[in-house]
Length: 279
Image (tube, helix red, strand yellow):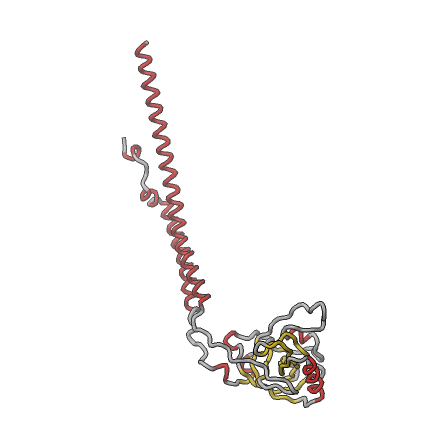
């Protein structure tokens, strides 16, 4: 009788079978793909060319920072820019729920036409008094149309549903919401971000807009993703091991059940023989 009949297969013997070797090769391929994705995330986790300290405080031309219709890149949020243009009459609008050093108030905004058919929304100044904001709108409508603005370029806050108590009130600095109230907008190119002017006019207070915090050159979200891919690669090997071990455990169980059945058959045969001898 061979040892294969006397003993169940070992885990090593099961793992060395052609089927499980093939599955191991497949797991190696999958783990290699996951490792490559993890390396790709790590390469993008560290900014190799971060903006220099204080870069946002260097005034740049608006057109060098962002183009009409484009989203503002994260490193450029809060960048100081300069531009010139013409105010569009009757497009000075008030935005509520604006805070200046933790004091709630209003922004007076305007449509600044910076090219023949291109405009950008500008937050001109702040006030805590709605009457002052209304007076500023009236003064701006009657004032000089030409303007030269230095301000921070900031990402659009996105529109929101109008308040039920006052459907005309705007509580978010949304270019899309302002555009719906502007005049002369046919075939108009509009900047997605807006400008927060550093110097207020028309009796308003300067908007509190400090320099943005310096960004870390390390993108921790990308590092987290890279760690996830490493875990997935490890899981591919664990899955192979777990499946092979399950197969081994099933074969051991079947072997033990077969052995137990053989013992019962042997005992029954011997008992039958003894009974026959007595007869």
